[in-house]
Length: 243
Image (cartoon, rainbow, N blue to C red; front, side, top):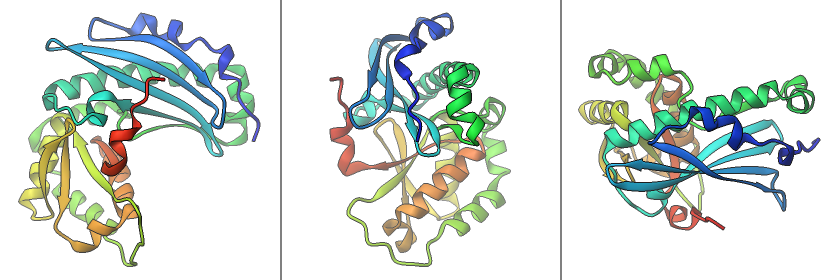
């Protein structure tokens, strides 16, 4: 794999025009020890709180992957789901500016895109803003009932997984609330509000023991316009590192 030189890119300056009072970029680092990684640090100011966010831009074998790490989630802090929705929206808008700049970069085109690799976004980053807006309407979510049932049915595992850490499905924002309510209505899952998201607790026993199923469901729901994440709770407390 040809290594992309992130150090020559000043993304902090590129995105400064997109910032507002709610979320600002305060730092940019390049980490090249064991992972080719650029990390941007943001502060989101809302309702008297200052929440820090790390945005990781990492080269891996299939291209570049962009993913966020939220301080409040790692530290078990709950902020209102509507506020979380707004923060994720602003961060997603900034992330798309970063993605566009990477796609326009000659070296990234040569080393990544020309080889059929992609710049991929984590399921906590909004990919389709039109779908995202549509899913904030409860009726539109309810209209997806048959689709949700189909996606869930496809995710149910047929094989037993032997895992050390279990990934859990989280939904975020306004659409996440509507979907969590729908899953409860369909008797697929219960939920609780934890780490600023809707923690989905499946009733099907096999879903409780399958990371593959949880990951599949998270990505399929993201394709429908929902903000999702597949999280390992046992590891979350140790992920946040500002070093």
